[in-house]
Every structure is written in C-alpha cells, then in structure tokens.
Amino acid sequence: MGIVFVADGGDAGSGMAEIPETTGEDAKWRSPDAMLSAAQLEIWFVREVLPLEAELMQFLNHNWRNQSDIADLRQDVYERVCEAARKQIPEQTRAFVFRTARNLLINRVRREHIVPIEAVADMDAFGTAMDVPGPERSLAARDELRRLQTALDRLPPRCREAIVLGRIDGLSGHEIAARMGVTPGVVSRHLAHGLYVLADILYGERSGSESKS
Amino acid sequence: MSGTNEDIMPEGIEADAIGARAADWVQRRNFWDWSETDQAELDAWLDEALSHRIAYWRFAAAFERTARLAALRPPEEARAGKSWTKWIRRASIGGAVLFVAAALGIGAALLLPELQEKTYATAIGEHETISLADGSQIELNTDTIVRVRASARRRSVSLVKGEAYFEIKHDAARPFIVTAGERRLTDVGTKFLVRRNADRVAVSVMEGRVKLDTPDKQAAPAMLATGDTVLATTNTLSVTRKPAQELFSELGWRHGLLVFRHTMLGEAADEFNRYNAQKLVIADTKTAALQVNGTFRANDVEAFTGAAQEVFGLRVDNRGGEIVISR
Image (cartoon, rainbow over all chains, first blue to last red; front, side, top):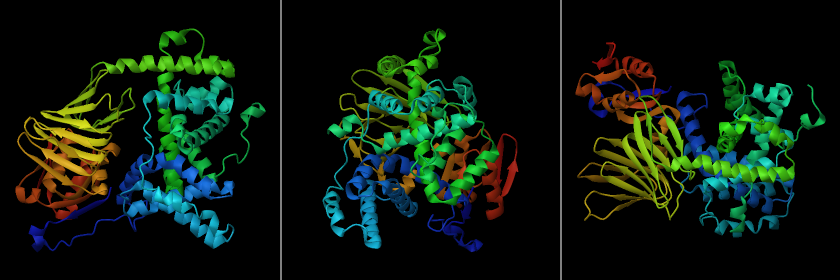
C-alpha cells in the first residue's frame, strides 16, 4: 500500500521534507495510492454516473444519427468523465456528464464533418434542462425485483436459464454446465452474454414507471 | 464444443469488444474457480486502459444488482418436489408470466420476516452489508451492533456501537430514523455515515439531507446537507463541511482500506486498533503527534509499523498482545 509519512511542523528540525500527496493526476493505476483512487472512482461511477445511463442513451440517440456509434460514444463519455473525476470529483454529476456528452458530440461533428452543425442545435435545449434534477430513480424493492424479472425474460432462453441457475439457484459455473448438459465454455458464453444484455437493460433503458413520468 | 445451434453464441453479437471482454471477466470471476493467477491476469487487463476498468465496473455493478434475484429462490420445502430449473426450462411464455407472478409472491413472503426487529453485529475486523426489504442498505464496519425495526409507519435503526453506512430509499410515509445514543437522525432521502463511540456520535452526509434532533427538546433540530460532517457529544455539536474526496476517504473501510491525510500517528493507531485484535500503543505524546499520510489495508498492521520504522526511525516492539511504537 502507499505509504508516505510526513513529519509534522513542530518537528521541523528533523529535516524531513513534506512529500506531496499523490493527486491521482499523474499516478499510474498500478501505483499503490492510485489503487484507492480506482476504488473511490468505482464507488463514485457506480453510484453517480451509471444511474444516468438511461438518460444519457436517450440524449445520444436523440442527437446522433448513426446508431451504430452510440455504444462507442457512451464509452467515450464515461472515459472522459472518469478521467476528469480522477483529478477532482465534480460537484454536479448530472450536469457534468451531459456537458461532457454535448462537447464530445460537437467536437466529433467538427472533426468529422459528417453531420451538419444544425444536427446538434437542439442540444442547447437539452443543456438548459441539464441542471434540473432527474426523475426519482430510486425504485422500491418490489419494483426493482419486477424490473430484474422483466429484464431476465428478455434474454435468449438458454442465456436466461444459465443466469437463473447461477443467480437464483446459486449454482457455480460447473454445476450450471452439468445441469444444462453443455460444456463450461458454452456456459461461460451464455453467462457473459446474459450479463451484457442485462446491463444494457438495467442501466441503458428507462424502467416502466420512469418513462411514464 | 457440443450443443445445439441455440448453444452457440453468434460471433461479435456484442457491439463493443471491450464490453464483451469485461462481461466475460465478471462471469469468470463470479461463477468459476478463481486463482491468484486469474486475478493477476484480470488486474493486468484492467491496468491496460481506463476504458477496460469502466466497462468492468459497469458489469460488476449489473451483476451485483442481480443478487436481488436470489429473493425469488423458493423455500426448501417447495423445491423438494420437481426441480425448480427444469420447471423454468419447460415454461412457455404463458408459463413465464405465471412464474413472474408466483415469484413475486414468494419474493414478498421472503422479504417480510425482515420487517420484524432484528439485531446485526460484526466482530472486530468484519464487514457486512444488510439489505432491507425496502431496498435500503446498511453497511456495518468493524465491531458494530445495530438493531433494525420496521413497521407500517416507520423504519428505525439503533446504532448500539460502531460505525455504519446507510443508503436509504426515501419514503415520506415511512420515515427512516437512526438513533445513536441520545441523538436521533431522520433521513430526507439520502446516504450517510454514522459512527458511535460511547456518547460521541459522528455523522457525515454523502448525499441528500438529514435532520438531526438533539436530546434538548428546546433546541431546534439541525438540518445537514451533502458534505456536512457533525461531531456531537452529549452537550456539544460541531458542524463542518468537507469536500467530496475527503468524504469518500472516510468510506475507505468499505473496501478494507484506511486512508490517512495529515493524520496524527496516535489517531492512525487508534484506527488500526478498531480492526485488529493486536493493539498498537504509542509510547509518548510527541511520537503520537507525528503526521501520517497514506493508504493501508485495515488488517495490515505490519505495513504500518514497518513504515513507522523506516520513515521516522521509530522503535517497534512486538510484545504479543500489543505492539509498542516509541522513539
């Protein structure tokens, strides 16, 4: 772990110079102090940024024509936001995320000359609404369960079966393979694909109760 | 590879390769044997790019969310007969709807017992997360006891000792009340940290607002907002506001870490002592006043004493039950 001991001011005679704290700015991920930054960043990202994904996807879909770019764009927004948060966690996450998304789209338009600039004109309308608090995202336990259940129902059947065996019955990968009568490799792919689709549904789409409001 | 067409995933179905890889790591780590070599391999991949890390966090979080599905697990008696999973495998779309309805019923039945009073405790060095039926979560730090009660009108938690981090689902009809000694906190939709040490109570609000009532009925309650940290004793109350980064450091224990920023050696030792049976003792006040910065594993006392030795040239005597640090 990162260890920096610094003599206090009263002990100035010891000749111990104060070593600056790692700010995270220039830290390598592997370096010990940054490990906490990574952990902190993860807490922040999962808690503050991920819940905005549905809104962000809506924003990107609304403002970008080429649908095949959307997943990439989302990834870019996350990367930029986290890169900045590593140095300093923004006060207003929501405003910060959407400002980042907006700037990213504008830069792309300018750089690639593929979309006329008017295409992003209504982003400013979005921008003004940016600081308004989002809809109540907290879901009651039962709603969350129902949402998970609905998401599960949308998985391909064998994928769903693997996830159900793993997460409801609590079986290990090998047990799932034995139960489904397939190889571990196939189970792995079902589980990975299941998770991939679940994440898109759980984070990328608005739940029924939210879209009504 | 055996199996029907259904078993074979189309190549490149995932729009992004990094996401597909991250989802694979998450399932590997959670469903299969996991060795140190696997961990090293994963760490190397995560270190390659921030985008890898972010994708991994996203799927790890989605995986965590599916933990709630376990509430759908039928009670043992119900499973005795037909295999639960065979049942699902055979379920048609119509059956699936029935399954959802039945599962929700079972889920509710399983969640209900949590409404009664329950005591949760952690031993020294332990760490536990409690999920309440309403979706709220309480994370207990080392050496902590809480009592949880819930009725139709309110949810209440009493922090008997130790430290707990609350993530509350707000419900205006059922306020969430935390008592710590004579201090009473009422959430207004929020995330906060409460630590109790006899009659000293510290509260840090990570998000949202909290109302703090004092034992003195005449005094107006204090409203705490995001970033506020309160230190209360029986007769005094002080409020300071901390930057977000400092607040997150206070939550280092959720990952088993202690974070010191200009912390006095004596205080740092006290922190370690909360997590470990073998206690650190600082011999004199001048040594105790030395300042420490850094991040340590809460259970790695040796790293800490080693640093004290190397950096400050302090003496470290391991006397079995306690470790004495002196000049």
